[in-house]
Image 1: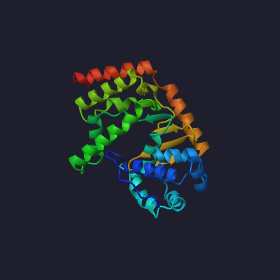
Image 2: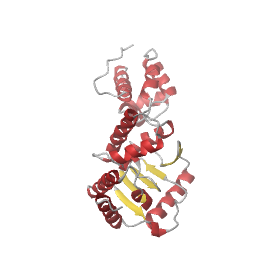
Image 3: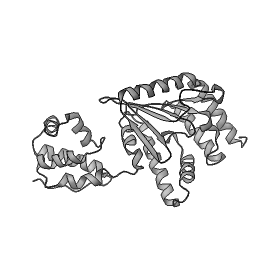
Image 4: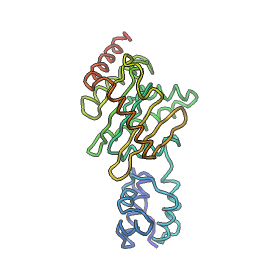
Length: 278
């Protein structure tokens, strides 16, 4: 049996799992396609595991160990590689966002995590979890800012957000934090990293009054929807229900301000916060 190699500095547990899978597969003389056949998945899926863009599965890890004769190596790696820094209910959605081709979100009261600035994110965590230590809160802020990096670079998804006007009017974290947030949103739009629309109060009722939603599409998998409430979330992959969610989102997008008018509103609100007039 080939021996496990030492990890390299900066390598995450999931990257180590993927690198070990590639090393041991190649040592066994198997292509990604052939290994996929043996564990009943596609060669492309094996490639995503090796690239650390998909979460390993327990039963598949056991099969890797049997086929590659690793003496339980992948079974031991599995719990470490799948440990998440996110809340359990959000883990699957966060992982899917990282590989999505497009992400469309509607948020009625909160600016989504991928668009947050540090001061705003800190205030959100402090408000929701007031008994957590300052160090823990700061660690969560750093993690959230790191996750937002999926909106940059050549593999960034098409990101489209519709924010209720309440999300930019409610002074979460105070005047300085809101100014930082809104200036950040304007920069994201002007740098063409996202499309942002605002659903104005004047629009009245609309198709998503009952909650928030995140829709994701992928190059090689069906679309999914994710809905979330306090301390709980649900990933939806039923095609009929995802289609209904997509229609609701399209109706909201049609009823919101145009991207140009939304940017003007965001920048005007940022100016109000900058001068303490809000």
